[in-house]
Image (cartoon, rainbow over all chains, first blue to last red; front, side):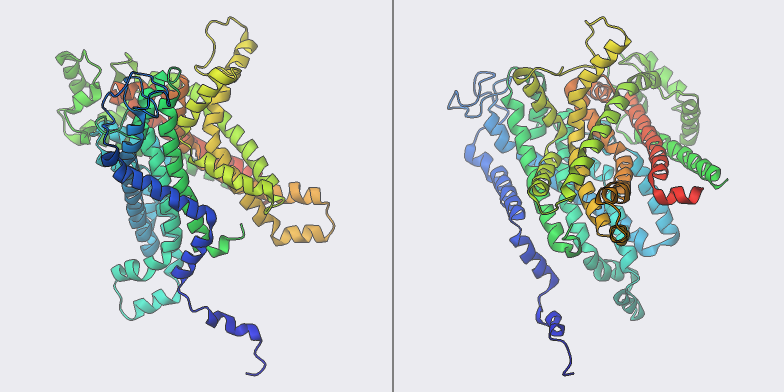
Length: 295
Length: 326
C-alpha cells in the first residue's frame, strides 16, 4: 500500500459526471459559444421579431428594386415587386428554422430506430435493415426529397418529412455501429441476466451510452436540414404562402442583376444559421468525444 | 477467379437495386394524391381525355396492381420510362441527352475539390497547431455552411460586375463559331464558376478529412519505424503517409457522388447549366412527374455506377490490396 504511486488517486478525485464535464469543456470552447450566441440571436429574432417589426413580408411597401439604405422606410431595400427585404429577413426565419429542426428530428428518429434495431438484434434483422439503408443511400437525397414534395402537397410538414425520409441513412449507420459495440459490454449483459426486456435494454440501458456521437451528428443534421429546406424553397417547392429565406432567394434569382441585395441578405441569414449550428456541433464533438480531441 | 466472382456479384446486386428503384417509382405514383393517369400526364396543360385514356390503356391502369407493376417493369427493361407531355419527348431520351453536362460538372467539381482540399489538408497537417491550420479550420466551416446556390449567385454578381473574366451562364457561347478545340476551351471556360461553386463544400470537407487522416497516419507505428530506419522525411511524408491517408478520402468521394448530384441540381439552376439540374428545375415548375421520376431513376443509376467505380479505384490505390492480388 505504501508504495502506491501518487498519481493513482487522481481518477478518484474527479467525481464529476461525464455530462457535466462535457458541458464545462463546451463552455470553454470560444467558437462553440459564438455559435450558441449566434443561434440564440437568430431564434429570438425569428420568434419575437415579426410582431415587433409588424410588417407583412408579402406586402408591397416601397418602389421595386429600392437599394438598401436609400429609403428609411425599407432599410434593406425592396425586391422586384417592392416587398420589404428586412421584413422577409425577420419573418423568413420561422419556416426555415422550424422545418430545419423538425426535419432533423425526423431524420434522427428514423435513423435511430433503424440503427438501434439493426445493431441490437443483428442477424437477419440487421441484414434486411442494412440492405434497406444501402438502397436509400443510392438515392440522392435532395432529388428524392424533391420528388416526394412535388408528388405530395408542398406543406411545411411534407417538406420536413421528405427531408427526414431522404437523409436518415448516416444516422442509422452510426446508431447501428454504437449499438453493435455497446451490446457486447458487461453492463448490458448484466442487465440481460437480471431479466431486462429487449425494449428496456435498447432504450434505457444502451441508448444513453450511445448518445454522445448521436448528439453531435444530430446537431450537424440540423444544419444540413436548414440547407435542404432552403434548397427546396429555392427550387420553388416550398409553401408559396409562407415567407422563407430560400423562397426569397429563389424568387429574386432572375433579378440578380437588378438587385444584388434581395438574394444576398436572405442567403447570408441561411449561412449564419448553418454556421452557428456547425460551430455548436464542432464544440459538442470536442466536448463529448475526448478521444478525438487531439485531431 | 475470385475477382471475376466479385464483379459478377456486384453487378447482380446493382441489378436488384435498380429494380428496387423502379418499384419505388411505381409505388410513389400510386401513392400520390389523385388519379395515377393524371399524375403520369403531369400538369402541363393541353391534356385531353383521349391522352388520359391512352395512358390508362398503355399502363394497364384498370388491371390489378401487380399486373400494372409487370407492365411498368417490362416497359422499363425495354428502355421506356414514359413520355413527357411538356417536353414532348420520351423521358429516357430527354434525361440521357442531359446527362453529359451534369457528369462533366460533377467530375470537374470532384477533381477541383480533391486537389485543393487534399493539398490544403496535407499542408495543414505539417503543423497542426499553426496559424494556417487554424485558419483552415475556420475557412472550412464557412465553406461548409454557405448554401451552394447562394454562393453561386454571389459569384455571379462578383464576376458579372466586378471582375468579368468568367462567363456566368450556359454551357458554351453559341455565337462563337470555332473548331473542336475552341469549343472545348469555351466549355471549360464556362465550367469554371459552376464547378467551383459545387466544389466549395467538398473542398471544406476534404481539407478537414485530409488533415485528420494525415495526422492519424503520421502518428502510427510504421511511420515511426520508417523514420527510425532513416528514410528521408520527404519520402516518409509523401510515399508512406500520404498514400495511406488518401484512402478514406477516396471512400468518402465515392459516397459523395449522390450528394454532388443533389448539389448539381441547385448549381445548374443558378448557372443555367443545361444538365439534369435545369431539367429537374423545369419539370418541377411544370409538375412534369414522369420526367422527375425518370430523373430519380437515372440519378440512382449513376450513383450505383459511381460506387462500383470507387470500389475499383480503392483497389488500385490501397497498397495492401495490391499486395494480395499478385
